[in-house]
Length: 145
Image (tube, rainbow, N blue to C red; front, side):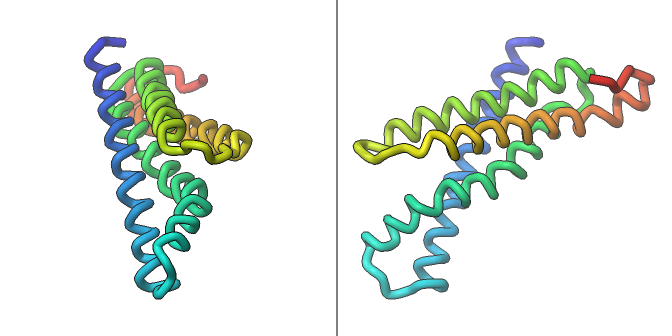
């Protein structure tokens, strides 16, 4: 595990966070324009707060699976899996800091958020396993975990 790989995992996590945020905003804008137009800004803001956990889970899982797969390609099984796990962990840390910063005085539903974080880290790890499984098979590397 090199410092460059850790930095790359951090960059993948930042990219996944930015893409997730942009797609969440795009969904809320689509909701406001096409699904339920004509409401007040407060109604859309309330919808965004209510729907964001579901939206970010639906977006975050494939994003982190892809990021884990991308970083693990061509690496040995161990370093690919560790790099993919780092992406998931960095993503969770970034999201956690943002959540605390933007929540102000709102109650935070830690149960669903914790489960969402675990699923996202698991998706990144699965991507890591999938990303280097072909290389492991081609080189004869033991593919058991």
